Amino acid sequence: MREIVLDTETTGTNHAGGDRIVEIGCVELINLVPTGKVYHQYLNPERPMPPEAQAVHGLSDDFLRDKPVFAEVVDAFLNFIGEAPLVIHNAAFDMGFLNAELQRLGFAALPAARATDTVLMARKKFPGQRNNLDALCERFQVDRSARKDFHGALLDAQLLAAVYLELKGGAQPTFDIAATASAVVMNVGAARQFRHPRPHAPTEAERDAHAEFLKKISHPLWLKETASDL
Image (cartoon, rainbow, N blue to C red; front, side, top):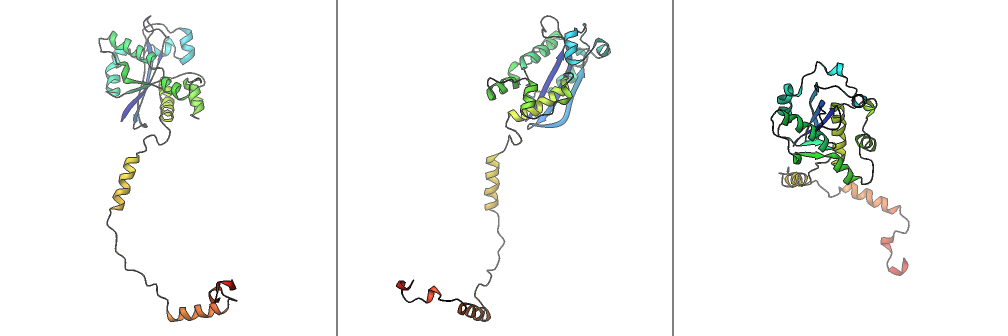
């Protein structure tokens, strides 16, 4: 099963008010295991970077000025995610921004049902607790030391991939009992190698040695004539 863990960084929180995406990070999973394939792209948002947003991700106007606009990378982005389900922390936020960018260019919106929201997964697993990405990394002992200064879309997607594995059940989330049972049945039905039975009868020398040994036992129970002598 192919899934894409996805995160974005933006100029703010209101895509309807003109905020834009400035970074996209994606990590490919196959059967919950990262394959090493990633998609990472910085974007020119075509608008100034507010100081409060730059304080979160550290991406300045000067850094983003020569980066491509979304229209230049949309095909590469869509090709990478393909038809795979998306795994996103607070999916409504990222999906809202992605769909605003896509629809601005005349592309169809990504359906909300395509996204698995790890915030909702975490709330179900840990009701009433903090379930932001930092808290989940701490709870699952995922190293987030690289995130202490700034957020980054690819870094956060990589951290979320590790958290998602834990939310799905940990190191063996897809343990297949049916397949294991089938393998056992196959082994039971496998052809067995014939071996001749080993001889078990004692030799004459062994019987004599045993008789001599028994003579050394004082008052052996098997020589008692009646049960009353016990």
